[in-house]
Length: 176
Figure 1 (cartoon, rainbow, N blue to C red):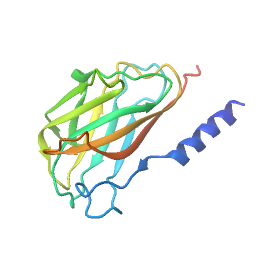
Figure 2 (figure 1 turned 45 degrees about the vertical axis):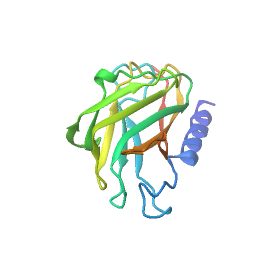
Figure 3 (figure 1 turned 120 degrees about the horizontal axis):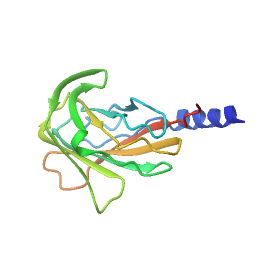
C-alpha cells in the first residue's frame, strides 16, 4: 500500500512537473519562449533543519528589461514553510555551478502569508541565470508536494510581476 501511495505521488509530480507558462514580452521575444525555472532541495526528508531550497531562474537574452525582483508564493503543501532571511542568499549561476554572490533584500510580506520577495540590489541583465538559496527554519513536518508560484518583475514595473510558472519540492517521511 505504501508503494502505491508513493507511486501515486510520483505520477502526480510527473504530470504536474514544473509548469512553465508563457510569459510577457518583457522576458520573451514571443509567447512561445519560456523562462527556464527549476527548484531543488539539499534534503528532502521531513523536519530537517539544515536544508536549503534552490530556485533557479534564467532571464532570456531576448528580454527587454533587466530583472529587479522575484516573488515566491507557496500555493500547496501540508504546512506553511517559513524562511530565515538572514541565512538566505542569491548568486549568479545554478545550484551546482555557483558564481558571484548577489546583494539582495529578502522579505516576507505580512499581508500575504507564504510569500517571500527577493529584491536584487542591482537589476539582472538579460541573458543571466540567477539562483535564489532560501534557508527554511526546518523542512515541513508533513510529507508531500509543496508548490511555489514564481513571479518576476523587471525594473520600473508598478505591478506585482509576471508569473514564470510553478516550482515544486517533494518531501518524504523519515522511515527509520
